[in-house]
Image (cartoon, rainbow, N blue to C red; front, side, top):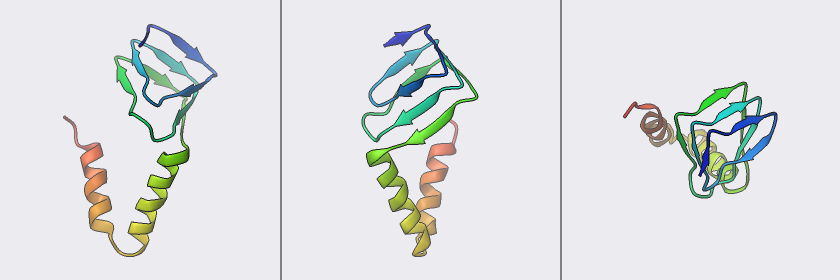
Length: 85
């Protein structure tokens, strides 16, 4: 676990990582579809979020579902992601 680290203008690989009390400034945040990262009390400023590998393929699959008329299941996933817990 990274704790209290300030990342500045860096590429940060997120798969399987845990961050607590970290700051990310103008970073390239990369998720490739592995274990999801965990963020606790972190701050983000001007970061660019990128998907690669399996994560990109998952997004392509969701887009294909949307384009063939399966908007309901995609919208349900979006709702699940955006609902506060």
